[in-house]
Length: 351
Image (cartoon, rainbow, N blue to C red; front, side, top):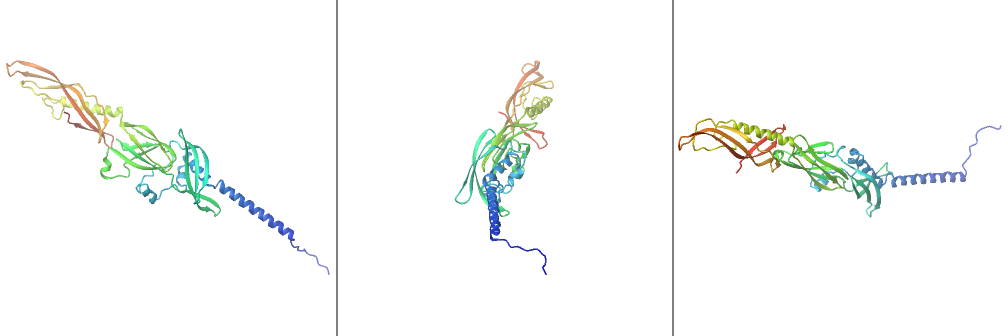
């Protein structure tokens, strides 16, 4: 009896060889593709370029989380920075200009396996070329290269806020007293370090009703430490408000019906008998000018003129007359801004 069924055939040696060859080809193609990815998309040069692009795009969240960017306690100590150094500038909206026209110039493999990636870019109006040292870390999925910076590109900017504790950088306003306490809080000039992403250009300044500082550009290069001074000076409104207080003070002095008004910069001594009530008036008010001193904004001794009018009788011959006399005086003071933005004035002794 003849049965029907499917005949199971065996692969010939040629077929096995064909499949094996295909597997080798596919494996080779995979390894070649993987190698290509590791040389390009996952290469050291591309790692640096992605970081620079993140800075240029003001994507600070990506930039500061790039491996090797964040500073640990040991690195902070090596840079002579406190563990609580301000990271307030490590956010979007602070950078004035990031690296543009980025071009990788070279990628050199060093003897220790690290790479020196040289990048050229434009930062504001300057063309710069910088070497980035990077090294491999645990690969992604065990196959794709990953990298980190050997040394963090983070810069440190020491900001001196002269004559006013506040400053602006980008769209951010910061207070240099934020991490201070005790007597440090009252200093007229404050200095504080800030971590800043690099390479990048920044602009520091400050402006409000009472003080204003000319904007100062700062370029933070790779791992650098730079200093900037935000020099706040009195505005016209500040001077006007001090002038108003000075005028009111002198007017108050002029209302005192005595020869020597108390706590006032002018007065007169008369040898004759005073018959009437002395009447003072201010002929010329001192013109207020303010410059920054060590602890406050100072007005140097400035000329003013008061006038005395009083009836007197001569002790020599008894003649009665009306004394009318201009009395020059000088006024000096210091002015400070209180926390509520009011102005405190302290009069100074003049020679």
